[in-house]
Image (cartoon, rainbow, N blue to C red; front, top):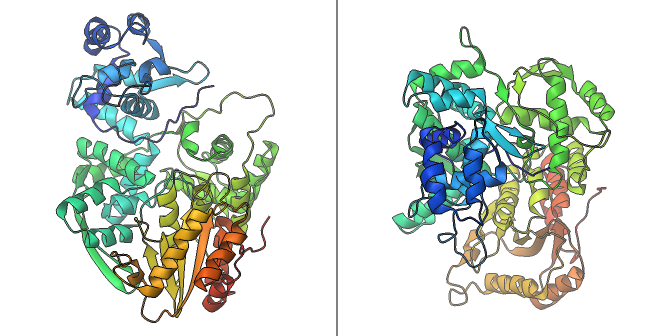
Length: 577
């Protein structure tokens, strides 16, 4: 079975290109003929599938393997700009400097067409073909009322569109970061958002207009990208306007104010469309298309999470049931789950755009769900739950004061490609959820995070690492340099003066390494740093960091006691599985 990621779309913006992608599947349509008779013969070599592609596009019923549509990635010896065209949809999409695009945008447009129901997908055969709705769309004249009606039906069947519209309807004027923070599954690495205060701080510190523009363009989490993509569609539909917004936030004792250009408001037309989302009066709520792939993205055990959530959705569709009944239902399906895990999934359904109804101690999904099919598996088999998910289950039963969105730290701590997100979420946990002052620094020749409370300061190095972090001597030396720079506070040693993050009242310092897990001789390196610097420190993994945060926020642990934990030159550990 092919591994596809339908349901969440980035970098596919233009409705006109979407229509061309869908029209490929209409026999002898203008785009179909152009591909067969001109573009594919010119752009695609025989070894990359030219003749087979032309045969597939010449049938009376067009069914095409996904890989033939998407094409291949960049072959060895080629840059991205010089990579040859190797897929049908690559040839459909015009590039900026050439007639075609790479496999990444081709895949994005395909996922868009499948996710909103213009193309159907056979999971067993890994092929795409035109749906009845897609045929209506392809046949409708550009800008006609028929085209607008078909697009409305398709887009409102896509839950994240409904989520974005609902948030704008409730709150009026929101930035992509404000929407992104509330879009997607709670506490999962596939749904990160950059904290808006951090953006404002960066805008104030940027020295030129170009630096500010680059910050706003390049700094965004996964959910923020989804928001930007969805809002581009809604702007083309006339449902949303892009209107810059002035926002203010506090970081520690400082107030930051800035303009976020990527901010959105509903139009009058959008407010009318919102009535379909809510199912008000004569505006019926449309069925929601929820594909299995949509129910988890980056998690290592995403097949397990998708299956669990698909079972819950099916069981709650149109009917309110208690969490205990859901728990029993899952057990029959071979899944042992805590009530808190089920509740997080139900809350997440609302975050992805489904209509969740709470009645007393029962919950129901009030949308008609379409497109949700569990892949065929061996009878009675259930995908395996990962150790990370087991740890999250344990934490959900213990984190009664800490927002469960910070469970994402468990994913990020093991993802060697997520250093920035790991630093950001660590800083956010300590400063926004708790009462520490400080921030993420995270640039060259700066510690990743620095926080303080009263007279105690903590210099933090975050390490996202796939198989556990051993604290190599190079990183130990780097921490030692930070400690010495902080003592000397000499601009000649480090002109960026990162130590100014600490208030003058801070007189006692500690250091910490935070990672998913620790291995090897980290204790020797801690003792080495401490011996040279005469300052104590510790390592703490993501799970114990969250348990410590819970103890602090609940009041069971004081801030002075918390800092004292970092004087052990060892690993800090709380009771956990």
